[in-house]
Length: 200
Image (cartoon, rainbow, N blue to C red):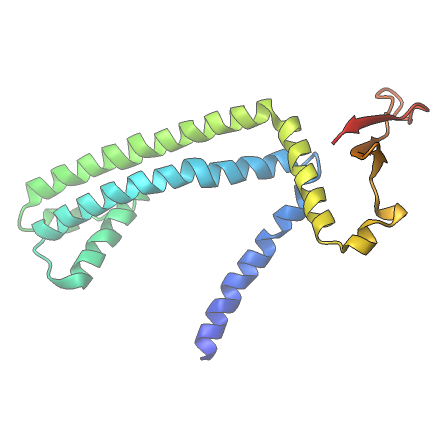
């Protein structure tokens, strides 16, 4: 029981610290960077993992058949060897010492070319494109995420507290809600006397 609690605590600690990204996203210095990480993880890396899983299953089964390993543990061992090959940690003697050394080495070279050279470089290229796209619209995305966070915080406040004057960041004009925006002089960072209201 204690072992399961330790595992749960380890994962919850990671999730808890990951929640800190929510609080650093409103800042201009870190917000766009967090958005880049989010888009890379859930777009580029996710697509890479789906494609890599297909290649991993195919090559693992090929090596599983060539080395005549039996049972589920043999297939898991084959997957482990292929995954280590992705990281460049493969034992060439292991493949040469099999029953079909030439075929095993050819498949290993093909695996390295397809996975390590082709797919990994494709992943890097996709991440580069994502970085360029986010960088172009970093300011807009940052403002959008900041507005979403403000909306989430507002939804967490009860209606009675939400109606208090010091909690309101909008004004009601003829039944329409408008954000209260203070125009600032970009050169001196001083507020300008005339306030403008932008539509929410």
